[in-house]
Each structure stands twice: as structure tokens, then as C-alpha cells.
Length: 361
Ligand SMILES: Cc1ncc(COP(=O)(O)O)c(C=O)c1O
Image 1: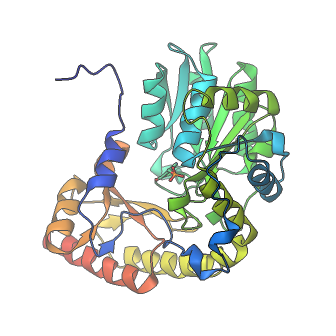
Image 2: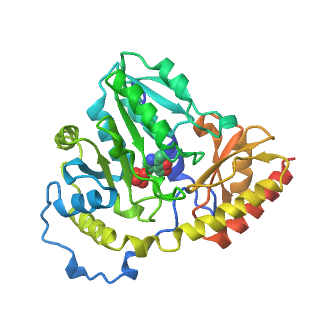
Image 3: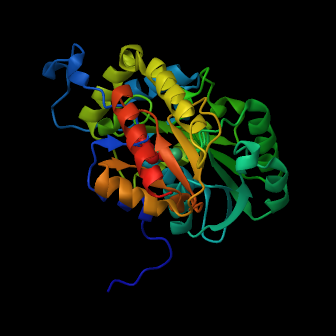
């Protein structure tokens, strides 16, 4: 057996990647995949000379323009996942304290633990609409705190952290010389869209990608927005990890940024229909409760029946349907539902979820 030192893997990511596929997925947190060849793209548009292009400037420029920052603030990475890891690796050393929201996205937490951080918590309570408890955050912050890590929109609940709260979190971090890492991979599905918190000051470090809201997970186009000196540290650090990104993927990502409005046309309308279907589903059930889905691609519901792994197992084995059990967020009587899929699929999936819930009554 290979000896294991602390968090050497993400158990959630392994689980999520290797579950048998189902026809009616409520576990995916992405919108449907977008076929780039439905746009006017020719193979000759890609640079296939075999060379890599360090810090590929056109992609950094495209990201900078879309989010209103300078290109020096943009570091590209393999998805938000690598962006989160790279950001944390540049910011924390073994023994440093990182404050996480609870419930948290497990791979971020596992990355911090892999880097030797000690973890403290600030709660997001369901009764408060999963708003981050800023007072508790202030209390748990110490002079060992190097980082406050959160997701906005929150995975799993899709709660929005507004600008006032973000500024308050920034001030808490500033007082102890820490940074705030905000994973914004769902933020472009806020209603209405919100600006990136990278604009709020140099203590903010933001990660994002074209995966969730744009249906382009295959490109692995992720990035970090950080003040230029810190961004430079991340580029240098990446000489240890990825060195350069796959250049053809970078070119396709530039092409995607040029066509992002076409790529996302229809997404918000579909999400609105799906959120409405889900809200109606919840209103019709006495055994499931959930805050109204207003933003984002996911919702986090409470089941009166207890451990939702039982529900997921029944859904997968009998109903060809999936959810994410709340155990992955340390809230086993909740489950996460993804609302990004095709609306007809989602309607059928919710019907099957209702049938499984009835069966377990
Ligand atoms: C909060 C959060 N960050 C990052 C990711 C991974 O994103 P990417 O595919 O860009 O690596 C996910 C995927 O579920 C996520 O929920």
C-alpha cells in the first residue's frame, strides 16, 4: 500500500468523474456542452506548428477585456481547478491558516490541505440563505490567517455574496495581511450578471474558467486574476507545474472569447425556465425544502428522509438519474441538484426524483 500523507487526492473529484453515466443527470453543474464546430472555425485557423507560446498574450488580453482588468493581472491555467491550486500554492505555506466557507467545494479544501494549510471555518447557514457569516469570519481570523477561500456564486447553494459583504471580507483579510480567494466559476450565471471581485482591491484573487456557464469544459481554459506582482509569482510557480498550456487549446479559447455571446445565447433563458421548474417542484413537496433558486446552476435541498446517499443510490440504480449527495459538503441530509441541462431532460429528471422520494417515504 502507498503511504498517504494528509490530503493527497480529491475524493469528491474521483467520485464525480467515475460514477457510471446516467440519462437524467441532476449531478452535473455545467450547462450543455457547446460544439465549437457549429461556429465558422477552420483547421487552418489553428496554429499547428507544434510550438508552445508562453503566457500567450492574445488569450490574456481577451480575458482581461471581458473582466475589466489589465492583462498583467491574468494568469492562465488548466481550468478553475488548476487555477485554484496555483493561486493557493502561491499564497500559502505549510502551517498557514486558511479560512473556508462551510459547506465548501471539496477539491479546493483538499488543495489547501495538500499544501499543508490548517483549516478554520466560517459558516454559511441555510436559515440565512447560505450567506457567509461575516462576524464569525472576523472572529476566527488570526495573525496566522493567510487566506480566506470562498466560492461566489456559492457551490452548492448558488447564494450570491454581494459587494458589501465582499468588501467586508476584503477588509478583514487586509487587517491580517491575508488574501481572499474567490472562485467565480458560476458568477457569470448570477441574475443580473455581477462584476468580478478582482476589481475590489489587491487582496482579492479570483479564479474562473469557460467550463460551467459556457459549456466548454473540454478546452480547460481557466485563469486567475491577481495583482501583477502576485500574478508574476504564479507564472513562475507554474514553471514547476504545467510549464505552458496546450497552444491549440489556447487558440480555440481565443476563438471562444470572440464568440462568447453566440456561445451563451439562450443559456440564461434556459436557466430561468429550469430554475422555475425546480422551484415549482420544491413547492409541491412536503419532504424537501430549498431556498428559491434565483441565480446560478445549482441548488442545495434538504430532505426530511435523512442521508441522501440512499436517495442517490436508488436514483442511479432504478431511475437512471443522479444527484450529488450532501455528504460531499458535510451536510448528509441535503443534496445538490444541477439546473444547467436541457429543459426537457430536467423536467423528466425532476419527475424521476419525485418518484424516488415517494418510494422512500
Ligand atoms: C466551485 C468550483 N470550482 C471549480 C470547478 C472546476 O472547474 P474547472 O472545470 O474549470 O476546473 C468546479 C466544478 O465543479 C466547481 O464547482
